[in-house]
Length: 272
Image (cartoon, rainbow, N blue to C red):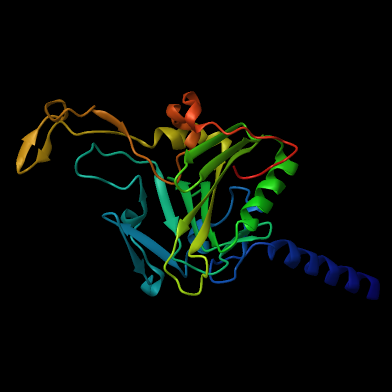
């Protein structure tokens, strides 16, 4: 009987350990493991305490009073009066939260998750800001060692050394984007910070996510108080809208123009 009792305790402890590997709710220091995502997370539960709403291009914090939130606020792509209605799913965004997520030893302060119409996650996006470039180099080294040479490597902007690397894996695609910026924060003695952005997309939904970025102008577009057709304004009726869930490899300019190329050596990973 004692043996059975101890076995039961071990089994329960094991279940708790497995379930406890990922936080149920995103908050400060929750350290949601981006490396372990399996596209089955309960997204609504994760954002049940902290969420940010994109309202007309500006971010506003929603306290989720009484735990309710209208689905219209989370629609993706964001509805626009100038375009024909289109629907893909929902996007959940966190406010800035210290160490809300992590990938290996790099901790992120913002995370967003894109879902389909059934609230099933299809893509994860996270941002980190550090005072040292070492964190970027270390993560790039880890990716190169684990996944090999990236399928794509671009220099997006030489002004801020924004580089993009993409790994096309069996079940998912991972994009790592690195760069730097300037800050007036007096605690930063060099006045420079380093941005790291990561995008993880379910390969089964990758094409659908890409197509969700296309929109078509309505038959009439208001300009300076008058209505015009898109053609009268010199606009292509169909456009693509860029956001954080769009892979850089979908931009043909980055692929074709040598100016954006990065010579990536698999034996010496570095940020060029």
